Image (cartoon, rainbow, N blue to C red; front, top):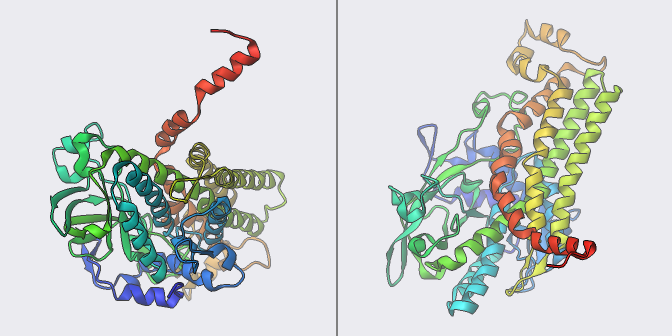
Length: 483
């Protein structure tokens, strides 16, 4: 089964035995929980579109491992065309869900681990790459969703992993056995964890010799013994429990994050891809971050397309679409959104082949892409709120609109352009609210700031990759300066 259908994916999650806590209660059925379900629908879309002939070229690829057709989210990039199609695929899914569709982290993790294990084996004589390729073959054959897990809680940011008062604040090896290793710790902010089949763990920072037990990469089933999840809160998330549709804003799709806890989890050696090789931890972090920063030039642009469309609809329904300042604001939103897309395409087109055969994006341009993402979505959201107007946060509830007595009053006084139902105006207002302030904002605005590393992380990489000395040399040659 190289390509799962959406239904097969949903059925596969029902067979898993997650240990999940949400708002202080244990959740026995995450798939159908009203708060979690929309995020599952987003991932489900990655399976459904793969069977749509219209989108097959973007959603699927030919495996470099066995030549079979696989979901692109399980693919190892083999050329710059693959890198470009990845970004276009992410934009498409953002347009279809207006939310985070969650498989990007695993795709980026798999591509990073593939190239790093190859180079690690070449230098150290280990056999991690062979293990990882077997894991990849299994993932592709079953079309699994893999959750890439990098971010540790970190504790005191001024102290290295091995110097923390609590050693579990960074995920680490606590025991090495003949059959495998035992792991303890946690990974925070884990996107789509409960919608995944497997977890691919990576170190969170560049390690030193003293931190060798924390230089760790492995894979394990998402419902493995010893793993538990504490579901993260999002703004307005309990609206999903009210039974409303309009007030949720986007009742069909969403995203989620969770704290993933490893309580003495056993991992067989066949699924261990780094264990103490601290000198390669920085390379793995850098490459994963580069891939994931490229991703934001696709997914955030697709969600931005929906937000721009919602703002334009709000202007239509408000009767303000012909105002010159509204037109100019929409143009600016489009300009900013397409600039992000341009960065995603540019770092892909400038990619290069690594020793494993997997293609890596241009790291400098990928970091420039993400640096822009930390800014432009905020301005796009601000302009959307400006165009929509204050009604998006002062509007009565859907229950008021449906009420047999006051519903007529709400309908009368919140009508905009004649001929447009008040309900349509309410729906688009709630969508803008959801995407700029509510649950979708977690996967658009806030994640644009902190996902794949906060702004300073990109600035550090831009400094490293910017080749300032070469630029000085160019200036000296033109100015005829001799040292």
